[in-house]
Image (tube, rainbow, N blue to C red):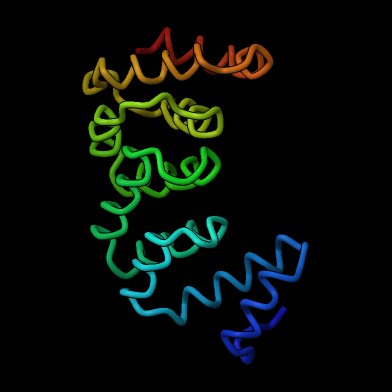
Amino acid sequence: MELKNHTNAQLYGIIEETEDLDKTGEAFEELMKRSSDDELVEFIEDMAYIEGVPYALDELMKRSPAKAFDMGMDILINNKGDHFLQACVWSACYDFNDTKTVTLMTQRKTPMGYSLTEAILLSMDSYPTNSFPPAFKKLIVDSYNDMPQEKKAEFSEMFDAFSNKF
């Protein structure tokens, strides 16, 4: 779907009225490309359209990676949004600077939801064991232990592999 010729109001109409996730994503992507850095920051901070935050963060990461990283880490550390959003944010921050992301996550005080925990467990395959903070392992273990039994069963192999490595 070609959205370049749509107005911002038309793009917001697509976002609010369609149930097609691909169209919604395309509309968010186009809106974010048109936004200034300040507008992207405001969009991320406001979280009025939480499903659009990853698009705004990705666009900001292209233009001002350090700012986007700081904003993403604020979402992760301070438990902003939901665990689905946080899983997307984790990926962006981890891809930007894996060691700093892991280190800064030790500041988080609340257990993580299952989507974020899964994203973290999946990304730990390539992480070096010599720089893994014990406080982050505790956060992961606590988050895993807080999961419902069916989610624990679903993630048990990943968690066991993580536990054996770290």
